[in-house]
Length: 254
Length: 216
Image (cartoon, rainbow over all chains, first blue to last red):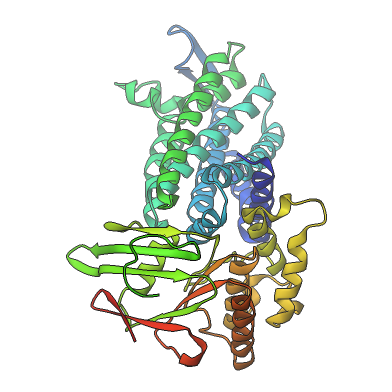
């Protein structure tokens, strides 16, 4: 892999993203609206739930609003990054293939897109993390932030994976909505999964580890090494699968 | 230059042997063979849907043939029929991106591609748009950029799919002047078009009909 090509690709992708002003504004408006809605509709009534990644006996009792704020922050980051990743992977497919024909390597193109995605994930994650203390103070703020970034990493990789499978936008969007709504938008909320009859599916969904990383950090002092490593592994596997599929789609016949 | 060569000659830049391609039950290319030597301008013509673009996509490597082989003896410059440029980048940024793909930005610090870009922009009369976003350009100017990107790296073999659709008359003439100049330096050009306006510009014109190539 030639780093100069990755750098050029990253720079150009960032320029394109920066010029899409409305999308850029929405990246910051959507989490703010999500937070505002939670702030307006929930109360500080205490709720108790079991955190899936800590010991079976451990129940935490926290404010309903605080729990909902962490959950909605994760959902905002995951959904936004998956759509952005889908867009980056699907857009300009023919021009990207022409670039490969001209000498770019598939790995260089995908790496540059991923770097651009990481840059945006970091910005969104930090923004969401920065506004979180306005509403409540988590126990370990830095790890909550790390959970947001890992949600972006896992769902960004998932968006790239979906973008590498589907050529058309609508199918990709529907596929992302299918999983994101079920997973990061519903089942990973401890209020839902704590009473679930069967937790096997929930524990194997992409947002499980990042959600646990943020929730455990926000409300306990338990170790978050396992959810962090789990997030890293899940995202990396999805990313590797995306690379294989993207390379197949972009391959040239010599 | 037409017909199936059995051995590759030293000045042959492109050799297509017994290429076949079907989409489902529809056989688009039945048994296409030809070779292209250096310093020639060859046209391939045919009706809409005759398989011209399919043949070109196989030649450059974007599509796999069902059978047959393609041998390329020079660095290719390819200009696709549909615009393949980044609309949300400027003209200059597009050149920069493609220069990176061609490896031109690694040849020292003085960016030699900038000189080529300036020359191409001046020649095809879109120098004043270098800092404009491609999305704001007219269709003809986008087509000029589409073409210019395919010759930035000074290729030995130029493969053009409907290159002058959208060109104004002055640019059309400029295109042929450029083609003649490059030809005299040994560059070969393969042009696919459903219209061949001026046969005298071509060294040979082949017609793709019912999946086979014939001299037109």
